[in-house]
Amino acid sequence: SPPNSASGDCPGPAATPRIVLFPSAGMGHLVPFTRLAVALSAGHRCDVSLVTALPTVSSAESRHIAALSAAFPAVRRTDMDLRLAPFDASSEFPGADPFYVRYEALRRSATLLLAPLLAGASALVADIALASVAIPVARELHVPCYVFFTASATMLSLKAYFPAYLDARGAGQHGVGDVDVPGVYCIPSSSVPQALHDPDDIFTRQFVANGRALVAANGLLVNAFEAMEPEPVAALHGGAVVAGLPPVFAVGPLMPVKLGETGEEQGNYRAWLDAQPTRSVVYVSFGSRKALARDQIKELAAGLEACGHRFLWVVKGAVVDRDDAGELNDLIGDDEGFLQRVQGRGLVTKSWVEQDEVLRHPAVGLFVSHCGWNSVTEAASSGVPVLAWPRFADQRVNARVAARAGLGVWVERWSWEGEEAVVTAEEIAEQVAAAMGDEAVAEKAASVREAAARAVADGGTSHRSLAEFVRRCRGGT
Ligand code: UDP
Ligand code: UDP
Image 1: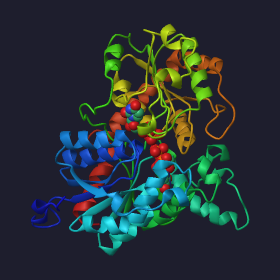
Image 2 (image 1 turned 30 degrees about the horizontal axis):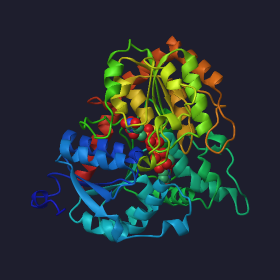
Image 3 (image 1 turned 180 degrees about the vertical axis):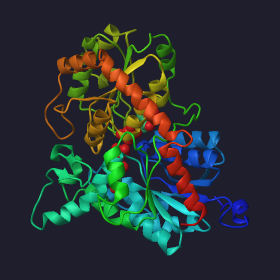
Image 4 (image 1 turned 180 degrees about the horizontal axis):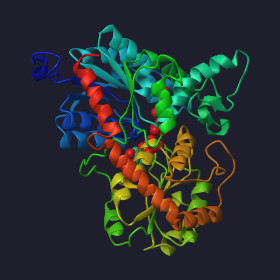
């Protein structure tokens, strides 16, 4: 789409900051970018455009983008046709996660595709996965470049410190041990994202390159708030993690935006939730981009049946939703009539639910979550306690954050991807029942909700951080 001539005609940089947002791929990145876009556009009267790389990896992303355009036309879309810059992922990275492959495609096309979009911009806000390629492009064009970190402040501190950790370890040493992030705390080796133990992994290469690049950004935005992660926020600000980091703006938890129907969902879960008593339902979801192994799905089904509580369970059978064509019955290995037996008490769905709405529903009393960071922030804003069951990537780090903040409990011995052990139905039932009955956990989760609300209210820490970011964009720094 053409550059915005209206703001191009504005008298000077002091008028309306023109901010270009450049997300990477997956709902875990698109969702917080959307929230940031709306906060800047509707809340801080910035002129915002969102770069969208088409075709998207998942259909959830394409539905989300369409719904965003319909609900918030002021957030302009700049569509980028990625087919213009193909690369042969299947030979270079056979079997790699399709979302990481997309990051790589974007990284390789950034110079070509991004430069034309930056003419006249006050600032670029690039996704963390694109940091090391976006920063030089923006610098060349004298456009300030901010990096938006879509995960926790604790993970940001690990990412910023990790290159120094590798360098200090010396040549010839392999594997990643416990990582004691200065000013934060020690991240045990078992919580370090699986991929980082392999230096040649596509994710590790991007992670290290992006981590090294952070010092060259004009600033870092993170969807976190001080009261929930006091140590990393203070350490990032104070220069303890790594010398020379630019200003860090903790602006979370960014508020969900109402987009209207996003299409595919089979809407019966709303009516079902409305019919359930207050805080009686266990909501179970492992996010938008990973499927549990079939034998683990079976144990989870049996565990939910045995826990005695009502439940809403979103099951996924594939990494990318477009590939998830199987029947619900096949997915949960339902040869013994599980779905019939739990009918009325449990709702199991394969389709997208509006998670934020679910978490705000008074019927929901517990969230069994993989602890993708967006899910944690949504649980925090709605005050729903979390039973953390991290599976992959940064999720154990996030689970620790949630547990430390009092948002819920994490059973640390439960396995994640790459570990053989299957968590049994019995254990699942026991932990779910314990968490549902724990009044202290519910009270602490409610106090996290209050802290989150204070952070984003007028004058709160996150509100002031976002305003300061906008002030800098207006001033061209
Ligand atoms: N989400 C949703 N409905 C679903 C699955 C996911 O609304 O059925 C949303 C969820 O609320 C969150 C995002 O998709 O905002 C997923 O991001 P998160 O960081 O929690 O996990 P990821 O999917 O990246 O692992
Ligand atoms: N991440 C990162 N550097 C990268 C790519 C991702 O720090 O180069 C972070 C990302 O923000 C998230 C975690 O690493 O905190 C896992 O990445 P992924 O893209 O899988 O996030 P998800 O989709 O699970 O939210």
